[in-house]
Length: 160
Image (cartoon, rainbow, N blue to C red):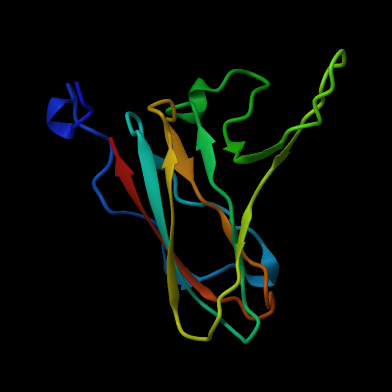
């Protein structure tokens, strides 16, 4: 049976669109958002993220990172485990017969460098959650002209 909202046995934890970041200036000095908005996405199959960025000065750009948590609340995190996982990038190692292969995994974030001074909106995704993620958040920071942060809004659509 298709995963269509009318067939779900319980209500979802979101109402689209979800505003993860109101349109305000990024933090000063290139700092990451101190308390990015968390969104419950339990039962979600995928997300589509829209960003609207306006440079604070010529040369402005911003970084963002999708973080996910398999825990519905911080109290459920086992001792010694991390509450949030950073998205990652995987580079496969060379395969040679008769030898193990070592691949590399690193935390990843994206940089958006606009083409002009006017507000620019772009869409990223869809990103599969495969119904296994409880919460997401997207910390952001100015990475172009950190002394004059730009303005950024982040809106997300969650799909069953």
